[in-house]
Image (cartoon, rainbow, N blue to C red; front, side):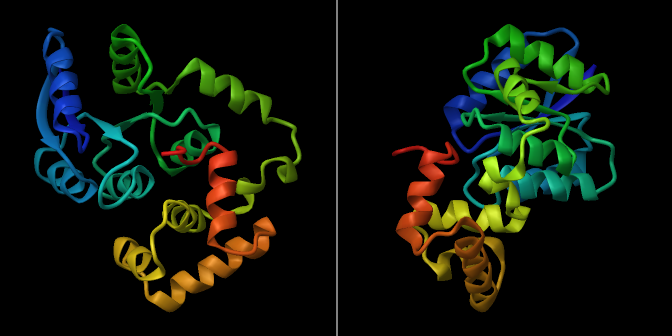
Amino acid sequence: MIKILVVDDHTLVRDGLCRLIEGEKHMEVVGQAGSGHEAVKLCREIKPDLVLLDYQLPDIDGLETTQQIVALGLGTRILILTMYANEEYATRLIRAGASGFLVKAASADELLNAIQKVANKGIYVSPSIMEKMVSRVGQLQEEKPESSLSDREIQVLLRLARGATTREVSASLNLSISTVETYRARILEKLNLRNNSDITRFAIRRGLIDLD
């Protein structure tokens, strides 16, 4: 029996995922969470075999949640479920310790197959994302400017791109305001951008955030 923790901040989505999983004889939902902090807490308490983790959460994002769960040392497998069909996210999350990256446009059968593969110590990445990841092999890093950013710089960039103030980024990432400003300056320098509006346009153009 695969013990699964489902993490998504949308109740309807979470309920749908749970119903789908509970319909499988060899899978069991042992917990639900609507935030990253709650997910880490539940992992520590109930020690699930697998976490089905939404990337976009209201507190800490899927990358940081993954890092914190991996740091618990429980051997819990992590399958990321996201609306962002972006190979940059997938690459960073796999590097952080996730074992799967699945876009929300996937079918129910693909989701269940991904859960099974990840729970059995395998790696699963949506075919459309895997194709992009493979195409990056051998490319110069300059062709993917976001690759020059650290994981923390990416987290700061995404929040600034969505319109968060420096103070809001500071609170959400538990960083000092001066540290956030330092990261912002590095981002602008590395990407040859001038201001936050440029950051937003860059993130939209690179498919890192949605237009809405």
